[in-house]
Length: 251
Ligand SMILES: [Zn+2]
Ligand SMILES: [Zn+2]
Image (cartoon, rainbow, N blue to C red; front, side, top):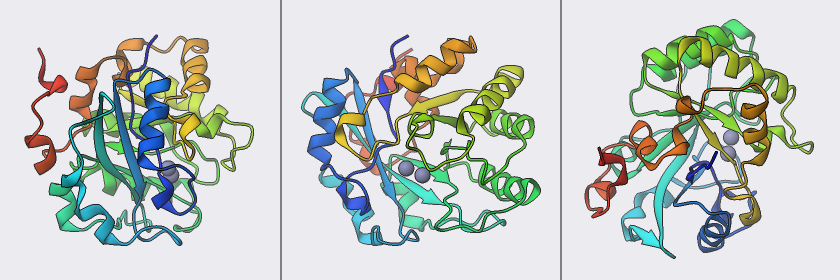
């Protein structure tokens, strides 16, 4: 199985990641990706970015080093009502949006509270990816999650970094297995991402790949096995409208 894009990566701008955009793109190339996306943290996380960072992505060309480059964001889910640190301009200026729960932004909730937050996020049709829904500190109802993701055409992420022995997320492997089983049951699509914070990890999706193989998860439910899978992720951004090459529109 070959995975062609990795859309959850961080650059040095995130404040706790250590490579530049160009270094990440070179890492993507080295690991054989055809498309690379960066999604730095939105502004409510301490030590990360101001809003202005996300307002000028139009300067980035369609391709860099021969790779299609997409400009996204990882929004923070702020509370159990599912509020996000998003601004109106982001819906037009960003190519795609991930929303995630982070322990340094959001209070740790019960399963019911976390699900209440995610139910609201699912209602926002611009949010196409739920990042790392695998951390036992944020317990979730995986059947309900997979069902609502399918109904709202939202992708659930299988996060490679969560499977690292160094990860601070708890119980991720067991939760990812539950997630995969529920997604298979409901026919819900997933996206595999690295969540790289260093260029060598961009496009390194090996742990997640091994897991899907181990549980024999259907390949057709993994969107990054083809470039057409980008159609499940991308917003109608001003930047994408100018792209000459639109692989996600190919029949
Ligand atoms: Zn995250
Ligand atoms: Zn991240």
